[in-house]
Image (cartoon, rainbow, N blue to C red; front, top):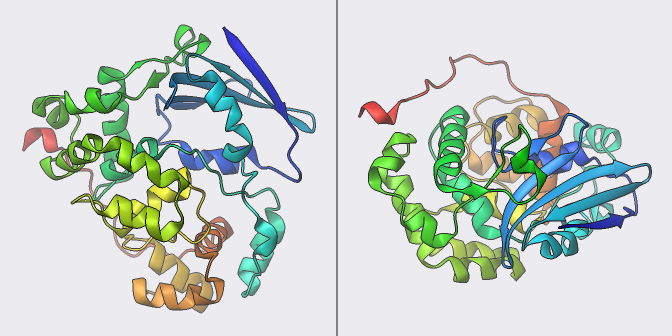
Length: 305
């Protein structure tokens, strides 16, 4: 059965830009864009699996949902689309940030309210290329997830809901290997799903408490915690520390310097205290990045190791 909700955003809302942070590669079985431009999500909610379709209808946004988690997904639709975000408190301190902020009035920081859903793919993205991480996420969901409720499974999209904590725990070692996931990352995921309920409580915590809760798990550091809480909690100050590229981009965009490290990045973002993640999003949207001097990281195949 399909349930429906229509929501009117209080201001501009860029669906593609805002929801795009949830997609883990173009073949993500849990997030796809339909031929008509509608956005589809398959999630494991506290009420069970659910599928959510989001589409713009004039000035309104329509959500349709299927499965045991349908009502939960529709209840959270405004927060998912940035209703809890307050961009009015953001004050640009650099010309580039000001211009990008002006050009993207519909940028909102979303909030899914689901920690594990963002945590597991973030762990898969540790210390590997995006291509490797996206492939692992895709293969694990295809082999160990379950069909998404509603029409998404019946169509060519073939969407999947990620496993529940027990399902993740039952994945055998050779399946992790087959997906190209090394022991360090798979072990971190297994430690996380053992305390899944405690981790999900972080969705209602402030940034410091939520980050501390996630980082109690060995293998989850500042990078993984920030990448998770940006999506699950919509934290405007959850700036990503420990990233391979972000410090260099921020340093080049704001100061014209190459090779900036985390310390230099945080110093440049200090005027945006409380809004550093938003500032970083705007800097990335500006397109001002240092010219590439080194080749891209090679994609490694852990299956042959």
